[in-house]
Image 1 (cartoon, rainbow over the protein chains, first blue to last red):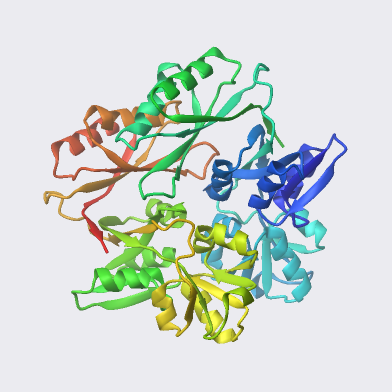
Image 2: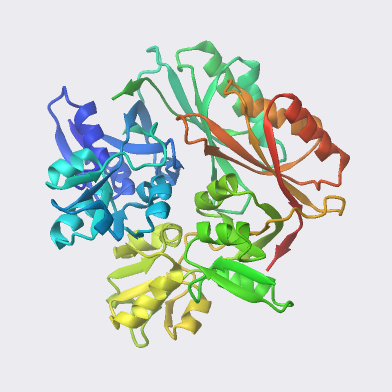
Length: 274
Length: 274
């Protein structure tokens, strides 16, 4: 099986992919961006893809949500991955020498407190591992990458300060995507729907949520993404704590469609904690 | 009056600030980041600040939402600003020579289709205007900045292709922030609340939205931001189409508080379309 992921060596996506698919004999397809992962799966270049969808500090990963909107793909699994961000430097560098930190935007955002308190500059890279590799290549002792322990091992860097993210309880939620829908009759613990209201009437979100409340369906995630047509109009991602094998989930979908909303079932799946 | 904004010369924030505060004699306080704008206002370095909160393609600007969560500030006005993104190059450069585009992440995201179709590389800068300035300074004809017409004028660059964003109807919503709350008895057209549920029970968002539905209050914006304490727990930003001078807005707040939620009134304000 071929699995696509956001692939510079040493990335969190790589670590999640290697650990989640550890039992299987796999071929890996490394991609330069999240959109490339989604396209590789849609075009059949890879059988499955793994992409981050939410982080406990940064919130929803918009590129992934917008990608699921644009591509005809299904979610077949959810992975909860603990994220610890460290300050990686060349060997022998000291903490007080560092004047600049390099990383991807969400990781810089996750370390806002550290960056502000230590008054260092920040520079944006395409991934945490690209930043780690740049620190390794440039041989500057005054810069540090914000990246994982795994990246420190891959690029032979020193962890000069560990756990620098704003909150110790930091997790990233990945989803495994595929081109084929999973078997809906199998019991699963969660279902993701994408609801696009056909009309933009006031109170539309509350009317949607009431359907779930009336059927005693617990929602674990709600995200609105702009339709990109007009400011103030949205698509809604909704994740329910019930599988598609359950009668009430199918009732909810039927009722939402009867209201006139466009409902896309993104998949029914289980959660794995790594 | 001193107004703080995200300040490299030629930025959209600068253009919005200059146009919105055009009638007044102002002192400007240029900041390096959105967080710096919020801090300048909180610390009294500036009287008011202007920050982007939502874009019709990219959605909520998370740094601003999280900043409003962390800082004790009020919203006193909303500005709707039309955004058109252009490809800015050195004079004499041709479109088919361009192999790389430079801009801030949200602007690159707003031009995803163009970037993918033209197969150019993208590089991240801290602002659209920093990218424009870099194009000017580096004297490379194979790179282009994605920035505004205003930035083209400021840095004397050529608009090699105009309106390259994915959707022609692209707007950014700015808010004007201040340390003092506005006079609530004056009629205003909108109110922004920040609702933090005290407990994380299922159906909490639907119970919150039902209060507004029951009082016939139209909501124009709902955004959840992670509490950053645990994956799956959120604060909710809610914007209503009613002013705080209206009885029903005050009823809604009282009821939400009686439910046990923490409700912060971020302000009541009018909208200006630039």
